Image 1 (cartoon, helix red, strand yellow):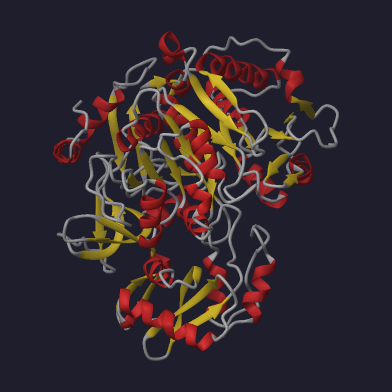
Image 2 (cartoon, rainbow, N blue to C red; image 1 turned 30 degrees about the horizontal axis):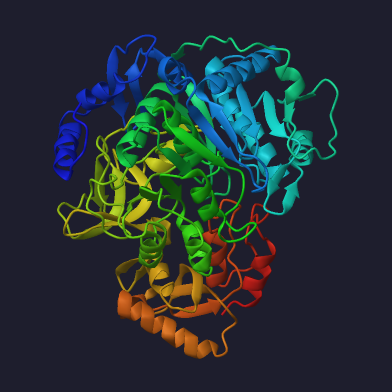
Length: 630
């Protein structure tokens, strides 16, 4: 297959990928190790919906992540671990060591009765053993369900029960900045309501006091001494389950997205190499947590399939100070840095001296993931971290898509700040109007759908295919609805404007909340904002903005006027917020996602039924917002 080195290469490869998608993905798939080649590339029906890739093929993804590299990379670092505490030594795990540890974890699971098809919950912080656990499950065909180790006991038990997990892998505790978190205590509380769990294996990390239940709970280090480092990789059908990963649902009940072995492997392996243009011996650092899809796809599976060195970071960007990210980049000479706009904006607000004291000259490429990045943050990132010489790949994708869908290609796609740019080869987007018709051409705006399957797409919601169909395939017949709005500018570049349920229709005009927030954030007194719609007698919907400032405004009305003027200048008078409420914080989940349904309720004047707020990072902020409602 033609490698993509220029924009002309991209256009040629993309054209081929949409004209002959099965031939394209078949060629990509031949780059991987298969135990048995597929009989048929694709079978699909978006009305059912049902999608199968590489039908009849047999493989094990861990052989592609580890075994195939051993003849040439046994002594190369596969995972580089940086602890929460900068004074704790880093750990380097070679591909040979990774192979041995993964095989031992696989054998440990088998010793405790876990077999192919069983679900295993992984509730661990960012330690190398979390990657061993993920790969150990995949090695024997157990289905891993990683739960972010910041979720509450109730959230954990809900996820364990939904997927009927047989075992839990966890830690005694975890470090997060200057805090120590009792993970085992949270697991013990969760397991009071989880009848399916038979075994719990506990990694020692914080060495804090824990309660061990005899016959159920076992120490990781003790059990690992009972097994050897030889474990054949289980042959997996291409459509066998690889993992279940839960994402928030609009109804409040989390959705267990199901990803399967063959298609996920092909798409993730291909997109990691293509988008980042990874080069031999580079050090790649994605700051996400393994509890999210970014951690699955672009910390563990994607880098390892490409023989890369992937950095895992246990800490947070603000501790011991706001220069921690930059200190790690300097210490390890990181080449590719991939993080979230939320982190970029928070670091942007710290004194620039935290950046300037560190040598960032090793960086070749920057990336953005998780939400649309606003232009101000993009420019700050490009100028101060990339020193105006590093491309930024602003990647758009979802838990449901498994891997990258729309993104610039490093050093190939001409950059346009805050634009996700062009679809990845093999991905066929379509922009729809509210009546369900595709909008052709450029210089348009509408709802983003995908009209042809791609290999890493989720196959269903675990145990609820009807919900899967209703959520993703019922809005636009025969197409996957992303839930996002987008613009396609005159040059064909895509810009994600935010969730469609975050689209505000003001006097017949569609306004993306992300775009309004980006404009509000341009005001020099504003740290962050969140925008929702509320019923308006004349305009249909009005714009309600919740705004965090650097300091308490001396004259709120004056600042409101300035913010409205800023929005009017950047977007137009139609987008000016009708109401601006100054707040000290926003209702965010532990992953940093704003829980907008709470803000909508407040904006609509309904503060009596805000739903479950226990998964918020700071539930107390909700009372402040309620009490200050306009």
